Picture 1 (cartoon, rainbow, N blue to C red):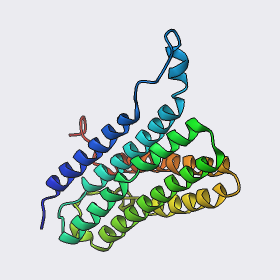
Picture 2: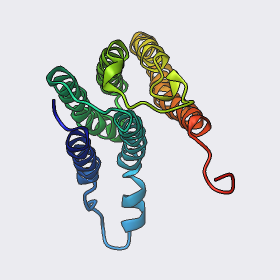
Picture 3: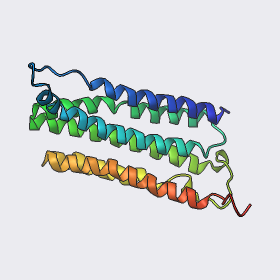
Picture 4: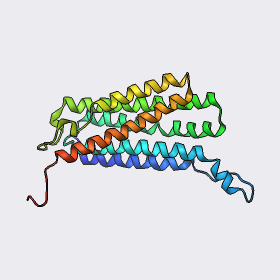
Length: 214
């Protein structure tokens, strides 16, 4: 058995590196003297792609961190599944760069390719989280025992499935309208944030009260 805190520390470190790498897309723009502001405005695709991916990776980290805080034991297979999850998340930097580059050049065909690539990676990430959740669900002996905490406080089984459906819809609709596909891609990321807020409320409601009653 591996120690859960060491696995969590390693995973947190990888998330921190991934978020840091996103910033590397920011470079000084080429500009004529006196026209720096206009050149900065032209970099809006980089900022948009960065903000979306930062929020996406940040939400995934919150899910991952809170989930593993409920784990008491780490089996070799769970460790391997966790590595698969981390691998899938590292892929997000590539489509992020594709989105910013294609938006800057405003070619609809290339934007469609970038959106589909991003959606495919997001789909893969959701699938790995589903594998993670299902494995722990089938091995309850790996979890910490907490009184009065609902089963869903440890994870939301429906979140990966719903997000998989959303990303599939994003991929399909992108071939008919890149903007509709992009909308569903953003909807999938927003869904993760909503699901995490729901999870955090369940965890807070399930934890024992402390303070004046003690």
